[in-house]
Image 1 (cartoon, helix red, strand yellow):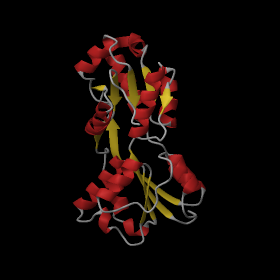
Image 2 (cartoon, rainbow, N blue to C red):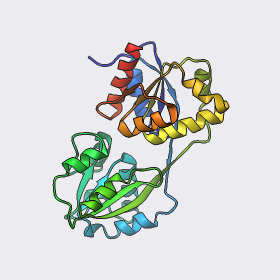
Image 3 (cartoon, rainbow, N blue to C red):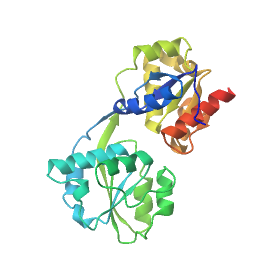
Image 4 (cartoon, rainbow, N blue to C red):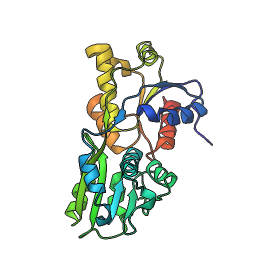
Length: 264
């Protein structure tokens, strides 16, 4: 039976261009949705490192992507040079973390050769299908605030890792007026975070809007996290997390939110 959120107002924090998918999912479950776009996705400060790595793509054994944004950036830069992931070098395999990342690859005609069973980067390390000693791995990632765990772990296992900035996620200038007014009036029941950065940027936007009393705007709200790393940032900056998605994707976030509100 699908989760039910009828009668509840839920705040969603996503990248601006990704809010539509989350909104549809939560609205289909009966929620009234307030958008709090907490990320603006754009290019890194320089395309040079990514372009340099992609010019040597045939020398890599694995391309390891952990977000749809990373896939989109790689495809964009390849197409600028008349290439694509669908026509990647024959010896290059692709590993993808997360259902959305894998789906993005499929839609480009370049399905992943390996997707770990859990939608977190740690699962990739545990289940990687081959030994990485001597393997050359390309890891495109967010410019700032991303995790270097993969690069460090592959390096410790003997892999030759090239980690490059493929995109940047920045904080928007302000939160939407409708969302701010609802939070001020105590109308929301829950706020859902889809990454550690959405937590950090949401806290920044709340402080900017409400001043030093901003934590009070979260009183009475259920704080829902998409996964372990996001939960850790919630505890660090917000003092708590009330539920965590399992699996660590939008469907899991919806189910966690519904479960928390049913018990509140």
